[in-house]
Image (tube, rainbow, N blue to C red; front, side):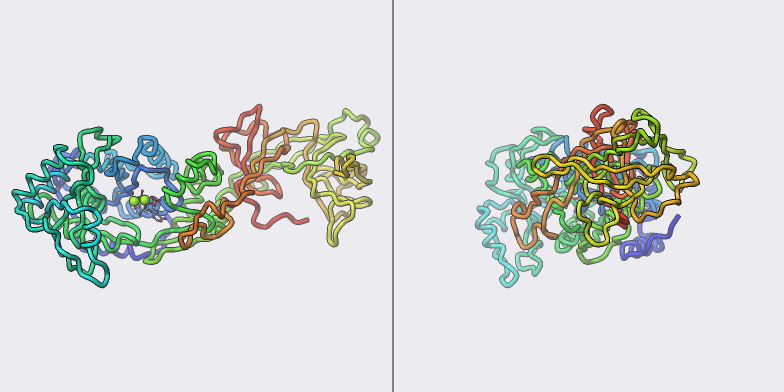
Amino acid sequence: EPVKPSNFLRGIIERDLEAGTYDGRPFGGGPGDAAHHAAGQPDPARVRLRFPPEPNGYLHVGHAKSICLNFGLARDYGGVCHLRYDDTNPEKEEQEYVDAIAEMVQWLGWDWNAHGVSHQFYASDYFDFMYRAAEHLIERGLAYVDEQTPEQMRANRGDFTTPGTDSPFRSRTPEQNLARFREMRDGLHADGAMVLRAKIDMASPNINLRDPAIYRIRRATHHNTGDKWCIYPMYTYAHPIEDALERITHSICTLEFEDQRPFYDWLLERLAEGGLLAHPLPKQYEFGRLNLSYVITSKRKLKQLVDEQHVSGWDDPRMPTLAGMRRRGYTPASIRKMADDSGASKTNIWLDYSVLDIALRADLEDQAKRAMAVIDPVQLKLTNYAEVFGSQDHREPCGAPFHPHHPEWGQRAFSLGPELWIEREDFAEVPPKGYFRLFPGNKVRLKYGVIIECTGCEKDADGTLTAVTATVIPDTKSGTPGADSVKVKGTITWVGAHEAVACEMRLFDRLFTEPQPDAGGRDFLTVLNPKSKQVVRSYLEPALAAAQPDDKFQFERHGYFVADRLDHRADAPVFNRITGLKDGWTK
Ligand code: ATP
Ligand code: MG
Ligand code: MG
């Protein structure tokens, strides 16, 4: 096990483990683990963390950071990480998103099963408890129903320089509030007519403590509870309760929730005083978000790209969603490495997109089979082929290892014929300085094949290059004694026209032209890259006919490619470029 670099969250967990802060806790009778374990048994996990996505969209690369952080800490400290759907907002949540979230957490390599129990939970399973807790707060004079309009409430909240003003409804008795709250629950009032607010301090310097709303009326069908409720808890109220019921120890969230922490503690302390929750209570800790250059990580904005069809769907290979990244060909290991290497700190971080590509190359370098592909093809005619090999129909066998460091993987077989496909950029009628590839009179090696000498080219009426012509220099085949008899400065890749596998090649580039597409409130649609997807017809060496969807390869000189997991078929191959080669191609 490699030693993980330390970060402040590890420090906190190690301190709590040493102090035994959470040891020996009995299960509390809450709907979380207690549903699965005999009540009264001590908690077998020394730390409990959670990844709590709202199922209102697909997970993105920022979520991968949070997933790897929470599941990784649980693994490293003998704990458990819960997958919890934070589904308290009925309007935007859908089963499709629930399913996609579970699939992606598993794809990244994490498991919410521990101690023989699934730790997959829904916040909506706790609605009954949340309702009871709200009545409890009302009974203790710690919550009231406010019938001010939203505008009045906003105006009376004050701001950073002005204290808030008490609502005229703030002094109602617990009996009056309880009756009103039950009317809210029973559907006697219109959506938005009133809210339940915690009664804390309208003069607090922390605006989040100025009597935050904790329940609202909203007639909407919930994906899990249907039409049972017409009142729903606010996120800031629901989240601490979810954590406490699941006996979470360290509730790790992103920095923007720092100002919510005092309310988190206030609420859980009040409910513990009332005997609804047991100590030790979970604690919230904040870390900086992960942002990637040239990418947006907001589900709302990603949904807009999908809904307005700027991309083909949530799993478009240009999308920074995990579904998109998987389809593009990024591996779970490369995403985990990027997340791990970025650590956890108290500031939001921006990573350059290249960090992901470097991690991808490091992962695939040793794993991906090699192959030759001609991406932008032009024909090469070997005009003396029959003289050298006896007949136009002769096929001269060639071979190369599937992987230079894995001789045990064996050899791939392909062959020379009189007509080949080569890259259009490998011919220049008038060579620029330092150009060692094909131009009239120059000799190059066909990789793994023979040395040829360029004699000229053919063009159509528009002057577009249609074929390059060359002659074979006899007895120069790679691996034969004559291979070194002629010195050349250039080597080019090729595929025999007689056996080439034609494919649709999808070449992706950044989706945006700016490193921070939505910075400063800019409309990110104005900086969409019009050339982010290019589709070309390419040719692959014959071994690629056996490629299965999601198989990944290094195409020599070009980079890493994947057979598209949805569209690739043996009789209609489709490949995506994942990323180029770090060191480029020596020309
Ligand atoms: P979005 O704005 O995209 O909807 P969110 O934070 O509202 O993001 P949630 O579904 O609530 O989305 O996120 C689940 C968890 O993932 C939260 O704990 C959140 O803090 C974390 N998370 C989301 N984005 C990032 C990010 N860019 N970096 C690190 N953690 C993130
Ligand atoms: Mg959220
Ligand atoms: Mg959000």
